[in-house]
Image (cartoon, rainbow, N blue to C red; front, side, top):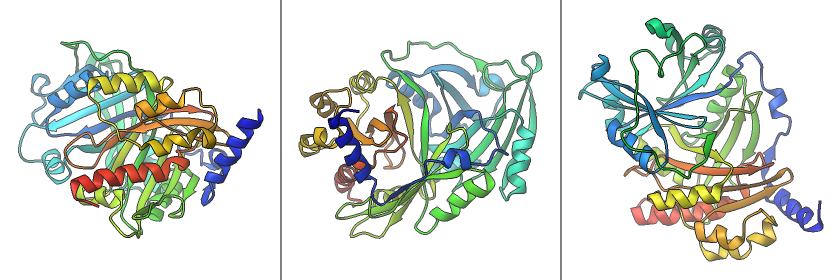
Length: 393
């Protein structure tokens, strides 16, 4: 390691002061619930057709399957959108009544289900419900005829969010029974390299973080990777606390946030106020080319948070060489952070709907398993500027 890199790593370690990191978290996670990864993430939205057009034209997702009236489904329409290892399901109600319509009325567009790929649905469901999980769907075999059988079960987590267990080993259809394959009527946006879901962030109310952490530890067998207290994540006006839970193979990482007392309303509290309950605040998508991806997303119309010049004036001293010129990072609004394991580059979108609730993060990792603790203050100040514009600070 060069002297410059060593100094940058030391500064990165100093940035972790107040952040408790367990480097052995993966080894400590229970092995009774083997999760292969995230199978899909389902959003319940007001208009699935328009949402699918948004993710195709701006984000480069390709539609691969559809469910609705044409497939004899009478209460909902769903579009399955795929990019590399990321699968989004966009579902909207077809009637003014029912749980989907009520969910959209109460929350706006939001994440309903973060589903896991598993080898044995019944074993995963039984292991979690025996440890206290509330079942939302008992193990079920969905018959796809010639396409085979898809196995699924679901449990409840924070708010109205579900975790489903999905086994596709005996199913060869488009997505699930009741769906048909589709071809895009227009090409998806090109030039993007979003590869997989890096992590999903859940927001809970003050005093509820430890309960959610206990759920992932005791019910799911996860272990705590990092704990950030309000001494780390704060500005002059607001603060929050966060604990990051991970499963044993490291493929699933769930930060859980709760607001902390501050002079003004934190971004976590703003989310809770406008979403109306606990829920998934943002999803981080991993890329290996954040510069090219962000350029294309900006050109397509995706809006990102901005950071002041002062952030970039000291960035080289704080993080050292991160493979991208500081001028380029500033031009695009990309943040950088370093710890003793390496560095990361990240950027956050503005909320992707009118309510100031759900947004995306784009992240590129080079060794670091952290979440950009050195950027928290600058990021939160940027979010507070947006909150002030909305009258919610």
